[in-house]
Length: 223
Image 1 (cartoon, rainbow, N blue to C red):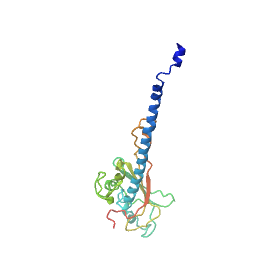
Image 2: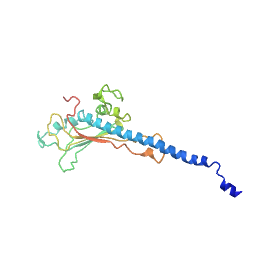
Image 3: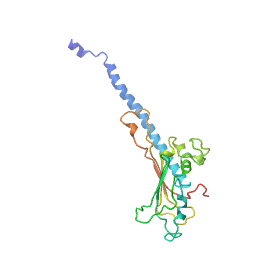
Image 4: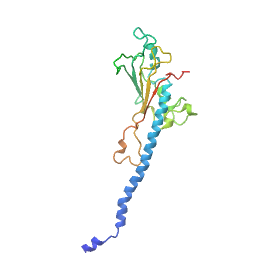
């Protein structure tokens, strides 16, 4: 009897199929998810490029930053002299915040004169475009495109902008300071449809997208 049981192969194909089919589906659906993740990374990279370009020629998200060149002019900083150091970090998370640091990594003096508060309208311009809308995919032309037209999961809460003085511009400059502007994403993990519950894929951190560009005239009314 035991010999017959050992030699019985009936149902063997069904057992093999039961083992292999789930593995095949994991690989197949996993391939789809990874291709979608690559699309998300590519779309996010394009979005921060668009956001940085808009930020370079728009009113800053930090209130008062575009007037800092004139605000620092005084006895110790005459017109035409080197701009004092500043680093302003703005985040759209929550109700939106901006903080300014004057700790110069090169040891010089810094100033955040007149820089205070978060400008939600300026952040909306960067995220939703220049048309004044707070919705995605409604741009009438490329000029009105915002970050979320490139990647519609992006909201102001997902955007972080850093304005940092790096030696350009001068005190008293009419167009304001000339910082480098870094636009990056935060709190925006990759989205997985099939692998979200497997191997902790749902916990993959924020999509790594960041772009730095030189500021120009920091005002939407600039010529």
